[in-house]
Image (cartoon, rainbow, N blue to C red; front, side):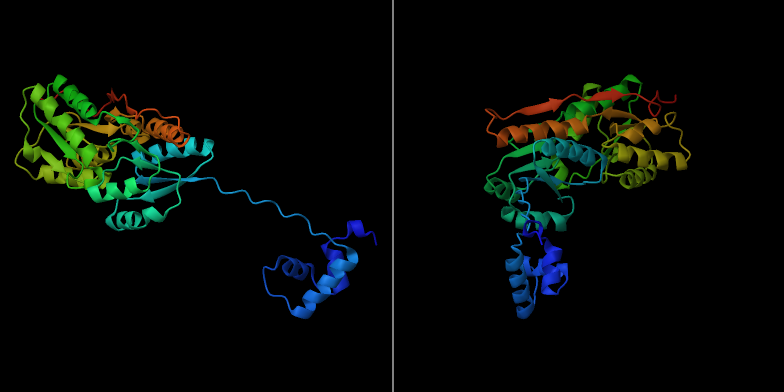
Length: 335
């Protein structure tokens, strides 16, 4: 036999065992009886068998963690998609963690300091002082998509200006009675976004000389179900506004369903404006404030890569532009 060409099957035949037994014996990955192991050893020596070199395991690329409130919601999914694309091109893995529910949030901050991550991306989330201290103790670069985190690179939009633009659009159409479907103001995780959009709404009303009617500011959640239920509460009141601004397209879509089921014409009896301009907004003919969610994620991830490489000499705070997209759910109030 040509010993230079001996393979594992030759060893198995000479030792009187299966090739898989030879493999297990040589790798030491599982138990092989001592006498069998000795027969295999002698066969290997007699045949001068050289096992093939094992492929060198490359170290896993350094991971970056992303903290997001509602990973399946449109804005977060788009932003995280942009983050992942840029990090992958830079040779990094992305670990996504949900901080939108209390249990998941508590787990993240209880274990965060044990994570072996190179950096952190925060997606539209606010933090308590105790949580900020945990993040600071990580001593890794952090970049922010939306929201605020003083002293860290951030890419977002001017939520205040976006909400004001929507109100000005409604005022220009002739509306003087405008309501707001708001994110939950008691949700500390999304407080920065909620506060900014409410301030923009209030300031634009004041600019037009219109009062803020607290009974027309309905706190809700963030999705279509929340929007539908918020409008149900609004319809139970003694008087309705002629227009509504919703803090997300999902809420606006829920509002539209409730209004139409109640027999109210949109926009004849009630105009509705959303915020985001996700893909479904076009099919619902929804007037909305468009924001570049994916680009925010891409730009923030690029800043994080710069920070990891030591290329950041300052802390950028970038606001990307929003724009009003006028469709069929907004129009002049019926006289």
